Length: 254
Image (cartoon, rainbow, N blue to C red; front, top):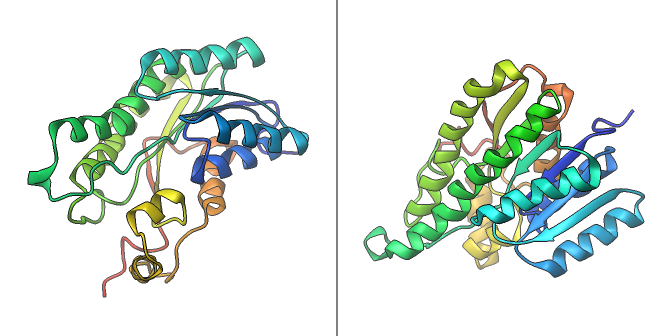
């Protein structure tokens, strides 16, 4: 039996990277998927791929920092599929990669709006529907950056993503008794368009790979498998966790 048979799963940042891989995997595992992303064209292509493989889904383009979009995604899940069982708040941005004194207030705020406030707004509207279904799984994509390791010129990224760990813990304690599990997924270096934006040359990517105990970057599909674990009954006694799936970058020294 498929791990998510009969479930409805909402995924933000679904147009690319980890979100795209998770959407394909969740659909293969039986979930009806609600796809959110900033750009329409990648969502259209993803939905077509899911449907051609026999899956079911809908998509909506918008900005996760907009509360109306967060509300609309949940309403879409309810109107098309009858509810919501899983929410994977995965959308994120690198923000300004600059020395901190050079970061503008506007750039700082934009990173927080997407990475932290966007996740909060998603959860705000997702949790009532999860509760109506008797519980469910709420997942945030954080990172090891700002949690187990620091890097220069990443203040907005690190701070906003680290905030998701605190949000995870708070929501886990607030809604655990009602059957809602809340966990954060903390990837290591993953071969996504965002990683290539941060490390523009093959040499830079190779250096990042060497920071990991496994001496390589993850593929998005590997992180999707970890998200599937958190979404599925296999993790039924896990909540409030910052789950490192980081290839050993947090323990590697030298």
